[in-house]
Image (tube, rainbow, N blue to C red):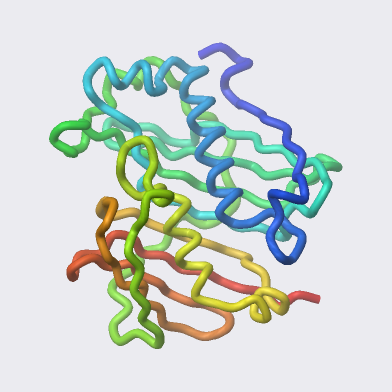
Length: 246
C-alpha cells in the first residue's frame, strides 16, 4: 500500500446550516461524514464500490462507536483522519480520528464494515483484499463496540413509518436516519442540558420504504439503550451516553 494512502484526511468547515440547536455539529451529520470518509478512503485504496460491484458485492456498515470530548462548533474548521486498524476475510474495522480547528484531537470513531452480496444479502469473502490493504499499527484508544442484548420492558415506545426521504440509493433506510430517530427520543431542553459523550449502534436488519417500526428505549439521563424493531425483528440496537453540559 502506498504510504500516502495508509491514512486519509479530509478537512471541513462547519456552517450554521449544518449545526443543531446547540450550535454544534449534529450526531447524524458526524455519522454521515464518517461514512463519507470511509468510502473515499476505500476508493483511494482500490477496494471501494467499483471494485466490489464487479462481484455484485457492496460494503455495509455493521457497527459504529463514537466517543467525543466535545463536538465541533458553529463556523469552525474540523478534520477527520482515517485508517484501517484490522482486516480479515469477514470484516474490516476502520478508525476515524476527529480533530478541531486547532488540530487538537477531540474524539474517535470505530466503524466495522462487512461486504454483502447484493442479490443474496449474504456476507461476502474479503480474502482478495488482504493483499491490497495493510492494516495500520496505530491503535485507537476508545473501547470496542459493546455487546448489546434485548432491552426488555421499555420505558418509552413510539412508532414510525419510513417515508421517501428516509431511503438511500440502496433503496433501504439510510444509516443516519436511525441515528435521528434515536435522538428524537428526547426534547430540546434535554439537549440544552446534556451532550452525547459516547454513541454505539449496530445494524442487524434492513428496513424499507413504507415499513413501520417501534422505537423502544430504557435507561436514565446518563445512559439509554434503544432498539428499533420491525414486526418483532430488531433492525438496530444502540447505546447512548450523556454528560451534563457545563
